[in-house]
Image (cartoon, rainbow, N blue to C red):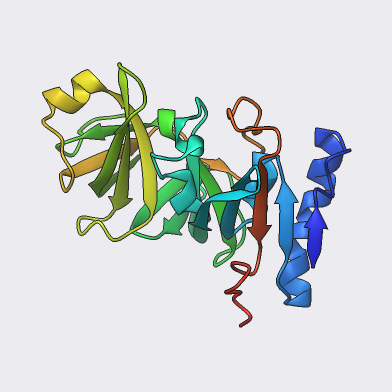
Length: 238
């Protein structure tokens, strides 16, 4: 099913009313969907794989979180950079009103009830909401602290560095991006392969829109191409 910017003429409220139907479309029909959009909120909610096009050329192709967290690509350099991760509801803490979500390489706590046990959810984690520590923090108000390994880094500018980590002490879990200062990078003597603890200040569910693609800095002809079932050549159904 090819959908070429089907929501582009709608306001945000109308989009939010229609997006849940698109989210269940693939699950109901079990067919690949190729979705073209300039709206990153739609991308984060619907895509599994991403093809980034600019002036007819492919800039990048791969899993959504990998493209979002590649420090060499425009997405990671945006002020609102972040990643979208798939998660599964594991538990709900009635006393504190917190839901535990399983992600690849760790667990996250989010406010409120995020759905029935076993339900799949997608969460958004902004680079500006991730800090890094070399030791497990103690007596902190931040509830989500996950061990991880640094797998890449790229200078954002003269002051900041975009650091890519993978969750888990073995560094084989989901990818996150953290935007830290060059001073912090040097002071902590960080390097590729370093074991760090990612402190996540905020986690949002993808059905609460976070941002758009305005200000990305790509040419006007740039397009986001998404395939809910997988990639164009490799769908889950195949």
